[in-house]
Structures are given as structure tokens and as C-alpha cells.
Length: 249
Image (tube, rainbow, N blue to C red):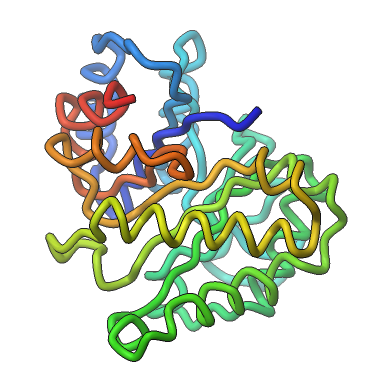
């Protein structure tokens, strides 16, 4: 049985004071849906955020991690470091990591392996550029990203993976894939999984949509049968907006 999840990716926003303030406000909000709620603050605020939500049903997750256990990787953070402060879920493959930091399917496959070896849950991101969509190549691009990074795994590994489809052209642009476009791609993703791992793995997979989800469009997007939640950017930085999306189910 797949889960509903709404995860807020704070990206490079909010210092300690802003993090404290936003978490305090989030903790006052009432959740009326069955969705799991996650937030991903910056590395510098992960421990404080984890401690602040320890008695609350908000899970604090990481925005990224390195594939090595330790070593001379200045500025990087390992899975073991995240686990040592209570973090059990990590976002991998976000389009901004791919675009600005040259992350590849091959490096992401290694990150996924490391996270799973540490018993972490992975939110694995992928999606096409606008040029891919205009050329009609969106399905081929998405299929390639999934297969290259994940299809070396055994079926049991997918119990610890959440997929997040993010059309790059709809991230931070104000543009949003229509609910029908989101549904069509999510159904294709599920079909791609089924072709390799069978119906049960595909049907149980939680697939999130990421791309300018707002309170005014979340309900329609989440109503689609293959859309199981959202990876939320800008709207997750406002408590009222974020919980309006959480409660859109």
C-alpha cells in the first residue's frame, strides 16, 4: 500500500533563526490528511530541526549526501554523518544538483547504494528539460534516468525508495505541468517499474510530483490516481501554504 507524502525542500534558504521560527509555526498547524510530512532544511540546521521536531510528526530529511563513507571530500556530508544525528531520509538527484553540480545517473546510482546500505530512505528525483518536452522525448529521458540509476537494484530495495518526478521546466518558474500531464507521466513511470519488477513493486511505489505545486493547484494534482504527493519548493517556506498542500488530499 503506497503512502501519501508531502516533502518541503527548503533548498539554500533560512538561517538558524528563520528555521526555528518556521518550524515553530509548522508545529502549530493541524494535519487533516493522511500524508507523511517532511522538511529538508540546510545541512547547518539539520540537527536543530531534528531536535525541534523529535516529538512531532514532521520528519526532517537531508537535501543531499556523498556516496563515500568518509575521506578527502571537502564540503561534503556522508550517510553516516546524517544517520548520527537522526536523519533517516535523503533527497537524491534533484534537478539543481544535476544541473549545477554535474551529478550523473552513474554517481547517483552510487549515492543510492550508499544510502540503502545505511538503511536510509531515498527520495529519488528525475525529470525532463523543456527542450525534451518540446521534442516529445520526455518519456525516453525519464525512463533513462530511472533505469540508469535504479535498475541495478533488487526488488526489495524499492521498499526504501520514493520517486519524485520533477519536470525541470516547471521548477521555480511558476509553470506547472497540468494535472493530466502529471498523471500521464506518473502512470508511465509506474509502467516502467512494472516492466522490470512486476505489478506489486510498481503499484506500491510512492511517486511524488515536484514543480510549482501551490495551495490552489495541489488538490487537483493530488486527485490523480498515480500522483501520491509532492516535493514542494517555494511554497514549503510558508507554513500556511505548506499545510494547505499537506491537507489537499
